[in-house]
Image 1 (spheres, rainbow, N blue to C red):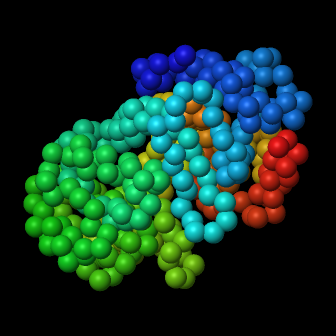
Image 2 (image 1 turned 45 degrees about the vertical axis):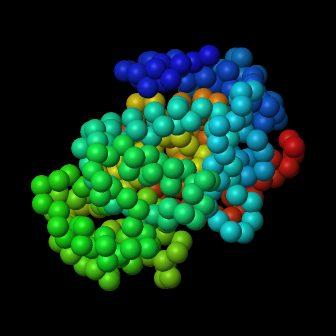
Amino acid sequence: MVSSEKIFNINSKKEFESLAIEIFKYQAKKNLVYNKYITSLGIDFMNIDELEKIPFLPINFFKSQQIISSKNNIDKVFFSSGTSGLRSKHYVFDLNLYEKSLIKSFEYFYGNIKNYTFYALIPSIQSLNESSLVYMTKKFIQLSENANSNFYFNDYNHLFKKLSSIQNKKTILIGLGFALLDFCKKFPLKLNNTIVIETGGMKNINKEMHKVELHQILKKKFNTNQIHSEYGMTELLSQSYSKKNGKFKSPPWKKVQCRDITDPLSSNKNSGAINIIDLANYHSCSFIATNDLGKINNDNTFEILGRLQESDIRGCNQILDQIT
């Protein structure tokens, strides 16, 4: 059993790699779906002793399978957004571990949560009990020591008044891309001492808009130099953050890599489809092959460039059909 203290107190590349190998062998044995997937590749997990040789589980498995490495009672099930088709499900066995991860991920980049006022442009009622993003934001608001911290998704007028009166208080306006865009067009204002964090949610924007274009509009309407971003997903318990130009950094217990688009077992150090190691996913699967495309920069930041084509995703689904 790996303790949360061990996960969140990694101080070196060597410590990360050692713990990652330990967690991999635990999950490869205990997680039945992951075990079947590894076996279908003709790999003996006991012979893997290098990070580069670890196979990553295709993220689509979360839509139809229970991805679990524990027999404990389930604390919570988070669902991905969407109203049609299969939705991803993340079975969380230890909410305390998730809360530690989301808090420590944030504070690794921004400092003590208690020092901030949080204004959230995220739906707080719809899917409240199943959205990991809502859960995370609600936890930030609870930990904030300012009574103004709250959800303002359906209260633009109130939010505008609050933001207009900010003077010397550290403030974060966090929201979905489409909600931030809608708000700033209706209520443009000069933000003071405020960090804007965009959390995704581009699908609801009517026209095709690249994130760079969205950030340019937000910067202009809010009269601010930078738009920050949070990169997370239902299938992960840890978040990465970008403070400028869409370049994300991860906390020490999380690592982002690239794989070859045409060969999921081949690594591509500079660009390709995104693989993620999240050691906080101890009770599910820490090694996930996502459907995002990106690149790794020389300073170890990463950028998200798009999504895999449906044809590439179907290839992952065919593997799933073969082992289930």
